[in-house]
Length: 121
Image (cartoon, rainbow, N blue to C red):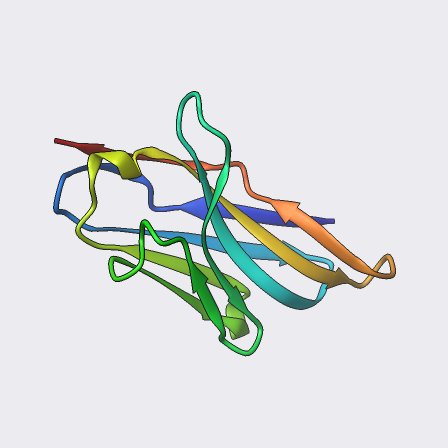
């Protein structure tokens, strides 16, 4: 089994910064890619940022230039540094990992439990 554990959410004023992290553990053979999604109340879950195993990144237009995704391959951890936060960034942030496990063939998709990020105006 695989677990994704997020940390680092919280409350911050507009213009401030937060870093959320996600650590993957369990029966992992290799991680293909890790991503951050978010879901605001009444809205669909949306991709915020993604990073592949070789370090290629992709960002939603709304966060480009403000958010940075990074990955610590040795510790199966992904970070999302969020700067110049805006009230519209308020959401539950979810970690996602696409990986190969040691117990079953193929690629598998796992989600963390989510961490709340609230930006006050």
